[in-house]
Image (spheres, rainbow, N blue to C red):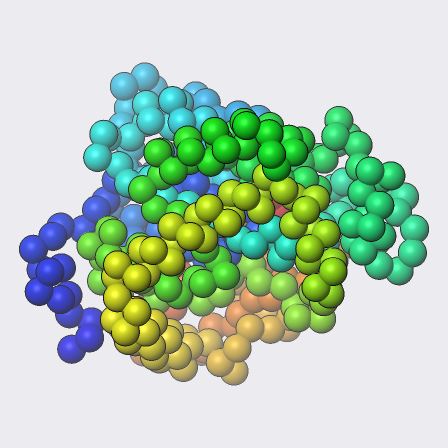
Length: 354
């Protein structure tokens, strides 16, 4: 049975002290759902935000932002959006905590971020033309104001999320230093561009089972809302986000080195098995077997939050005749982040989409 642990796995114990640095627009909501389910299953203690779905982002993280925090309290899991601040995070967690995160090709991330957060970035509102993103990338210095409101969404967003200055040029020594710091602090850096392979590496590092990994894609955009980027535009996006591009290139190399060490053939087999399990769960849980527009979602608890002025984020309808043994799992797998956090006891008086 492929769901059984291998002989090597049988000798290890699942890791339960986890710090997931949730970056923006990197499939991190899907990964967070996996973590929330794992944490609930093992009755782990989450460090959750107080009254919102992030730790006062874009402010730097401080442990006092944790709901009901008291000095000396220790937690198992931290996984909400934050602007990373290692010393403060470390004070919440046991010494054996596994720190991991996820990155994305800056060209794709920029496209996603530009469209998702456009309503929150006043400096993009005056960009003329049909394709504002293309116009911005052709003349970024004409439109970009580094001190403008929410400007970090437009330049080196991943580097910013890790707590570093995002307006650095790629060859600035502080970029190299920042990348080295991330490499020292995080035991595993995953890639959203290779999400299934990432989950298999995570499973291996944390001694989890395939059952822990099954997922449905959450917070995904409608294909029609995604702008196609020409090779030239992708190059421009990577150059503009030079610190992020260096960050991504570095951890892209470490990622594939890990895949090699894990074994290519073994990885292919595991990914195939994960896809099979996901397809199995789709047939069990999802009405129609696929994601739908928000307007077609009948259960309000299943509706994902939408960016200002758009309804581009897809969601799911639960099947009405789910077998009892799968009912709870299906619901949790399909529950958007905001509703899941509410179910965990976060009283969301501020809901932010970022």
